[in-house]
Length: 124
Image (tube, helix red, strand yellow):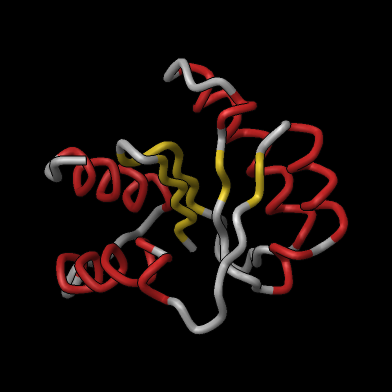
């Protein structure tokens, strides 16, 4: 599974999960902890982060809300039935599905290389 995190200027962070892994509240909160340094590296002040995610069960868990508070991010409300506000779901995965069609990967590293090349070829 590919997890993609965006900021207003483009790609902020991405992770490829191992086969069989699922995103639960704990993993999502851990990812947020890895996104924060990526944003800081881009000189983004955490107190200025306006965070938008949908209302999926992992996103609304207590541990995630505690992590948002800990990181000093401000949570924006996500209206229901608004897939256009999720750039990965609405645009990226559709485009990636076409690009990856016919590809075969033997190892996770092959997937990581393909994803890196895919994003490098885009104007993000």
